[in-house]
Length: 314
Image (cartoon, one colour):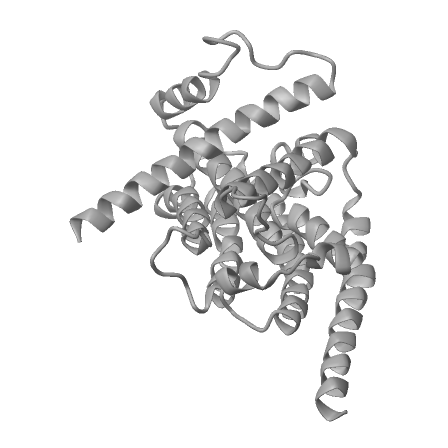
């Protein structure tokens, strides 16, 4: 019992360290995309920068709005981070003794609850800016969850298992991402919108909403919100690899190592997209999912169901 608790704590600490250094990777990457250096003053090449930022944020004075709902105001960032870390329980590693048999359902349940932390943060701040940002973020997240669920159903029909481990092992020589390129692209764009990243970062549109739902947060609460956001980016990159690009093996190379490399490439794609594309208009964002992604996902689902019925009947 004690051993499992210690292993869990070590795993979560490693995840948080990975998230911290992914933030450094993003800042360095954006710097070179914009022809500048990025963080390079702290320590060797700026490598301790995430630890420095964390020490600064968590030792600052906690300031809250006078009229905020105090309990909900402090619970919202913690809730967002806990939900983000819960998704890492689904990590389909070869070295784990046990895996979730119903991992897909667990993923859908936990990811659907993320909107509540956003809503709680925006409402509890008792600020019109924060509430407006929260409402926009919730509408965006729920809309793109529809596309994500339909694409997940599509994958489940092709690889009939609710376990991420079984889905990873079911990929043959040709990955689903290459067999169904439009579906994998829709999944990737929906992941960007689901995690509130540029060019769909309307939850934190600084030029429009004064930072959106988190405007009243500073110090530790601000740090927890963004740790949750970047943890979600990494875990969605991991699931994208598992669902569409398999585990794969390179000679005697460990499957987990290959999956890690692919996950880092997909995660860096989030940074690449942020550096390349300008922010969408909000009406175009909502029209994209309801008028383009939803018909495409439904059509793909109907097609694969029709093919399966034809195979069974004939």
